[in-house]
Length: 424
Image (cartoon, rainbow, N blue to C red):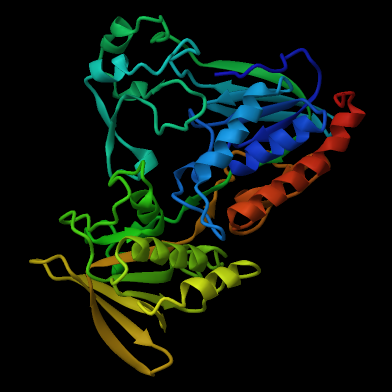
């Protein structure tokens, strides 16, 4: 789905790959400085990981207000073309004179959609809700959350029963087109910004920690969705096994991070995220004891003030030590955490009702052009002239740092738009 913006023949633009907070920021800053921008996102909706947050630190702000403002800025800026379900297929040329081929997968729903919901009621097929990390389900035609942009349903056509046209039959606005085919578009672009973001590390690879087999072992991103009012539990932090509030909670830091067998690097924000999650728990259940098992507590810059504020809670305990194993009482689904307490010099086994794994950030850089420099972990950096990286594709960082970084990427790309005659 396109927003109002530049056509293929308007000359060279800045191409931004990725529609999360980094890509949105880079696109807006470049466009508001006078450049034309093509913003592409491979999913049906913009917002990325930030859209799934309950709150983000250090001020504990909800993302909805900031995203709403940015979506309005995108919609109202004629210099920006937004393409969802779009992937960069190829890029040829040099800085100031690239040809970008973008493949567009069909959404099957047009801008005539009014979100009336009749199609959802008629749809017979269901899918796992990836926005809620599989904790809930949607229909094959879906809208992930109230703030999603573009404001139109999308259809996971692979799940539709053969020959089914139920959604199209009930649409009064002729917004559903089930025979829509993929297409390709070619753009002249002056520079490329990679803002492809991150994904959480697959905790199922950490067999000793029980994720995927022990129901009350969850990850930090799952807890984030639980705490969100529009999440699968409507803002209630509960045990998946029985839907009850936990009587005690443990956070396991560096779950896969700083480990040469998984992610050798530190993901930078996991400690602050777990402290934020402990604040979620204590806002809902002030007396619940929370323990954080850590290697080092890393909360750089202004986040250190956030750490001092949260750790003042007497119901929060920090324990320096790696967790070696998590096991379960099969009757109660309570969890037994084996941990080496490094400061006390002894191993202990402690019982908890819920365990949260602080998994790290994995860069999503597959498919980016070779002009970007990559490190051994898949993070990208500014490469040849005309190639610029922003946000968590570049390094693990929190939202405020990502916004600053994306603004910088836009500024570095702007001179090529100026030279190619795109600056207005």
